[in-house]
Every structure is written in structure tokens, then in C-alpha cells.
Amino acid sequence: MSHLASYLKRGGHEILGMDVPEDFFTAPLIKDIDILDLASPLPTDVEKVIYSSAYESRSIKALEEAKRKSIVCLSYPEALSYLSKDRITCGISGTHGKTTTSAVASFLMEKLGIEGGSIYGSFLKNSEAVYHLGDRYLLLESCEYQEHFLLYELDVLVITNIDFDHPDYFKNLDCVIEAFHKRFLTISKYGTVIAHISTKDIVESWKRERSDISVIYYGEGTEFSSGILKIDNCSKTILEDYVAALLCVSVLTSLPGSVRIESLGSQIEKLMPLLDGYVGVSARSEVVVDRDGVLYIDEYAHHPREISVALENLRIRYPSRRQVVLFMPHTSSRTEALLEDFASSLSKADILILERVYGSARNDIQKEDSSLKLIKRIWEIKDRNNYLYIPTDEECIRYVASFLKRGDVCITMGAGNNRSLIDRIIELKDNI
Image 1 (tube, rainbow, N blue to C red):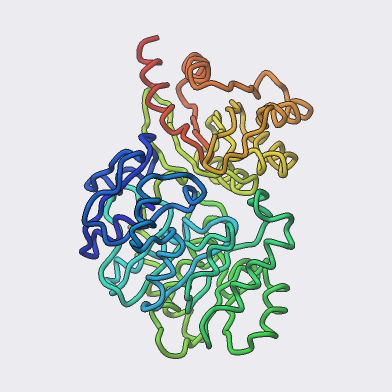
Image 2: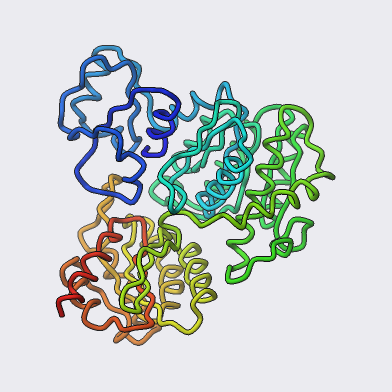
């Protein structure tokens, strides 16, 4: 929502926001937009209301008033659908890697000065300006949650991977696969799909229903593997997201018209030097501060596979440093459905402080904190002295500040609000 608001403002619209007081890492994107309290009445002269789907089932005074007055009200995915109708649009989908792929592709397009823009769930480090140089092309991070991505009119679809997630909506992996199946079938005629090689078997079965679609595979064993990039200190999974972004930009900017797959290699070679200027994306292994020899990093990973990739990548970058992870699970349903995988991935940290499950708008918190179930499972496989359950922020801050030492990498991890603990830990350490 923050990225969309900033995108629309750069497009010349007058934007006003309403929200709860809680801060989030995307706040810099809306620093120049007035934000009213969520309980405020609807401002006058409003022509259109765009609201987060997280608030759809809640009683929001301004939203109810707008509907009574027959003011156009669009959910976030409906707003993206509206924008996609008159632009050449690429949707970057997948259970993991969407934001990184979107950010790299957006960075490349902006560097090329392409008449287009992007909307995704973060923003580039050291930059609070969204990419919007016109309305010809549009790049969208396209999430499968509640099948929202089916609303977008796409000419290009990227599928980074397909994994089981969002158990509060999908019953099992087959349901997730079927959502991607429907997304595949509804892209524009003669559209292009860029898919990771791990999805080839299912994508090939879908292609029999849409023989007009061109499919390009990337990943190990293909022409477009991570080996084409000469980048050190980065895991293969992250590099494959970069490859997906390079393919995305090469394909998207070839439209309208036919995409010549045989020429993509040379196009990518021309784009690769631009990657030297890419500095990363906020909240994806973002170095927040280096203080007194301790490196503080914020990482949005909140699914077991994302956690494994993030910790592996940080281990490659900082091989001799102790990993101290403060993990805040996001939703009880995800924590319990993927309990074994969470236990396996989190046990790769040297020290783990498991926090209480984040009370998100999905409101699926259970009577017993699911984090407690998770830590009990971890204790069955790891030394409990290094893997702790600390439910409150105050206790967590005091404990971490007491034992962090020079050379440590302290990582706030998850889709909750624990990034703010970094400043509080530093402040307390300064006073010890």
C-alpha cells in the first residue's frame, strides 16, 4: 500500500492516507503523505478510496462512509488490476523471491530510463523514491494469497517457485498449485511465462491448454542459470532471483511484439553491468547499522524456505560471525502448519530468540502461543541453552543486549514489527 501510494503521487495524484499509528519498514515511502488516524471520518473532496484487503472485513468508519456516498472503493489488488488494464504489465509471482526479483527488475528498468513503473512490497536501499517514469510498462509483485493475483491483466508472468504457504487460505500444496494454474491460463494471448526450472513439470502440463504462451525456464541446468552471473558472496537462490529479473526486463521491454528467445542471452549480457550499482532492497538482509562491532540486520523472511535461504546467504557473506536471530513468526496458522520445517530452518542459527507470534490483521492468534509449540519442537533437536522463547519485547531486549559481543550478526527476522528492537537493543547496550 505504501509503494502504491507513492507511485500514484509520483503520477500526479493527490494522496491522503489513513492508518493505525504502528510504524512499519515501508514508512519512508510515505513520509511526504499526510496520514490520518484510522478512526478519522472520511475527508471531504475524496474521489476514490483504495484500501488494504487486510481491512476489508473490519468496520472502518471512512470506508463505510465512502460506500454510502457511492464513492469508488477499490481494494489494493483491485487497484493494481485497474492499473494493469492499460499498461504492458509483468506480474512477478512465486511463494518466495518475489520482492527481490521485483526490486532488481525495477532497478534495471529505471537505470535504462524505460517509460514505466513498478509496485512491490519494499523499496531500494538508500532510496525512498519509487520508480515511475511513465505509464507504458508496469511491473507488479503478484502475490497468490487469496488468489489476488488473478485480478491482474498480465502480458508477462514470472514464477520464481511454488511452495505451500498461506494455510489460512490454502488447504494444501495442490490448492496453491491450482491457483498458479489459473494464473497461467489467464495471461494475455501470446503472453510469455518466465518460470524456474523446478516448476517445469507442472508448467508443461499447463502449456497444453495454452499453446500460444511462450515459456522460458531459468535455473540450474538451463541456459539461464546463476552461473551466468559473476557475483561473489551470494547464494545460488538469490542469484537466480537476479537472473529472473534480467529475463523479466529483457522480455517486458520487447513488447508489444514477438519475444525472440534466441536473442535473450545477448540482451542479458548488455544488462548485467548495471547490476554493479544494485545495493539491495529494504528488509531483505538489510544492514541497518554496524555498531561497536555488532552488525544489525533486518530480514523479512517468514517462511521456512525463506529463512533457510536468508541464513545461508548471510553465512556466505559473514562466514566467521555468530548468527543471533530474533524471529517473530507471522500468523499462528503458518507456524503450526509448517512447524517441522520452521524447526529445521531456525535451528541453523547459532542462537535463536523466538518471540511471540505477530498479531497480524488476519487475527488467527490461538490461545496458546504457537511460538511455544515451535520452541518445544526445536528443543527436541537442539541445545535449549542457545534456543530460547522470550515472548515480550522488554525481556528480549534486555537479554540480547546483555550477551551480544563484537563480531556478532544480530538479525531481526520475520514479517512482524520486531525491526524496531534494533534501536532499543543498541540504546540499552550503550547504557550497560
